[in-house]
Image (cartoon, rainbow, N blue to C red; front, top):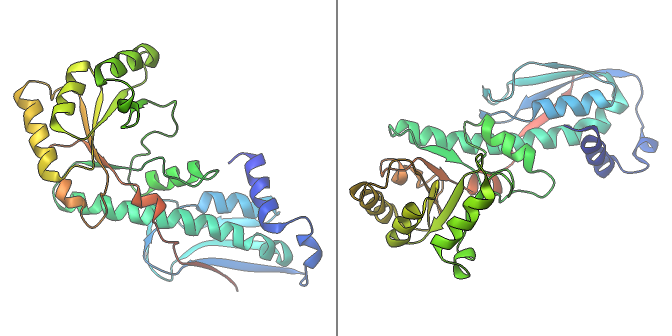
Amino acid sequence: MLRCELERFIEEDVGWAGELFDIVDGECIGVVYAGQEGVVAGLEEAHEVFEYFGLDVELLVVDGSSVREGDALMRVRGSASSLLRAERLALNFIGRMSGIATMTRRCVDALRQAGSRVRVACTRKTTPGFRKFEKRAVVLGGGDAHRFDLSDAIMLKDNHLKLITIEEGVRRARALAGVMRKVEVEVESIEDAVRAARAGADVIMFDNMSPEQIQKGVHTLQRLGLRDGVLLEASGGITCENITSYAHIGLDFVSVGQIVHSAPFFDVRLEVV
């Protein structure tokens, strides 16, 4: 991460006078353990935190690894006061990012076990100031980062289409997008999916439509010769619990906000040994 980011996180957690409250001295060794089974992420970020405080770090596993409860993740050696000062920030990175990576892998595995090649993507429903770490955690869990920000692609959403037609919206977006950015249209009906495809959209997102409706939409696009050359996405109400309903209806990927905004913290702890 950038030095300025790291120091902002440290300032938030340690405060202006945190070093004044050191009540231990000498050196020690600490080991970070997984408190549950899952996919670990955020170790690189935790490594940077510990190193900032002058501690020596040995990574025992790498980000993206599957771990079991009780597995040792990293060993940290150095000043006892520095270790205790860095502990919570480092564990917060691991806990937040591993929770996201674990939930992402759960969704990806559900689709693979169902024999589907549909990809799992996240959304822009992220924590302000922490997006790049959350998106990295999704990728480490086997998912796709989708758009990082508004400049990555042009998406015409429902509120855009209350103010402009699909056809005119795609025309304007295409003129602005250049050759490198995709144009995506969010639709809520089969008719609008056909209009978007005919207008030249690169990606069509079926939003808040049932798997049965989406499958009809895919078949309609195929029948009209509009399926090739367009990516099909589903979004809205998709969770790890119902994701297999979207496994074999003709989609290329699904976007799941749950894997970031509802991912529980991964249980992780540091013990002085």
